[in-house]
Length: 132
Length: 275
Image 1 (cartoon, rainbow over the protein chains, first blue to last red):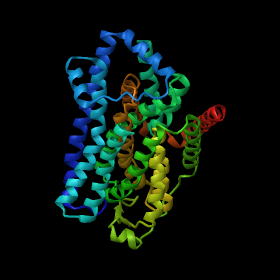
Image 2: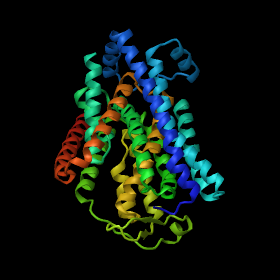
Image 3: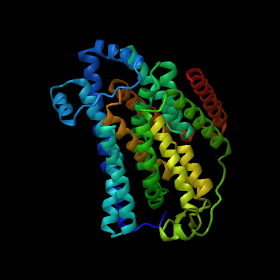
């Protein structure tokens, strides 16, 4: 309903929903696998961890992506779930990346700058979280 | 197993009410985790932020396909919300809990005010100079199925300032701040309400995603809480959106306002107790 070009229409209405839903579905499947294997393999761990979390305020439990992937491949439930949450946060990132590519293709300088700023902001968030 | 099922049920309930009220699950999941699961504020905020990302992903796809989202308005304002969200999520690790609880109470009051006052559109036919330069003008279908109505956009700086605040609240409190975003677009920038709601839904995921990335990178997301909460909220929100066309939302509006006021009271009381 807004002033969109054909490119915007095609990318917004066709490709973006397909890709975003695929990422979302992947994240949900990974989370379900992690949750079911945790409940199946070691339900006692879940209860103990839950009660531990009730007592503490902040976690500050930094883990590298490489270590998480390695632990997930070994079938450890908690890293699998963390990986699922990371995939979930890719959904908004992917959406902004799509918009960025769209505006680059249209040679729309102002909006390339706006989307680049948002992308840089998201990356800055990761860096800030790592060092902060 | 009982704890896990309880968390799933709690999140499904929050997602369901969030979808029916149009305020999103985040507004209800944080107080639900605090009050019923006795989870500390910092951990509840992280789990809620992830659930906001999850629910907005599905919702915004539908709104974009329906054609109500103004992509250019969203991209301009996302610069402001992401700045606020990253700052807020960073500060969430430093700010005392009682301050977060107080801010949450204030946001609930704002959401209640918006639920009561949101009414019709005050469409402006022309853009101001900055909005014209940014090509923010859009079109919506006429209610009687006639010719499309063109709408203009005004006061982008005023809207952007409110969006920084909305992002800040999102990063600090793990909520989507949808009510504040829609208010900024509708009341300050004079964008039609339905376009404001759709554009806000499109933006919420990116705003919450920015905050969630800070929390994840800092290792401040409790996976065993966030994973079932995210899954539960998705299921609840889906169920809510299915039921939505069959219920009289206007009649439920008063109930939502009472719930929001009760949450504001509870959070305000917690803030004063912790001060």
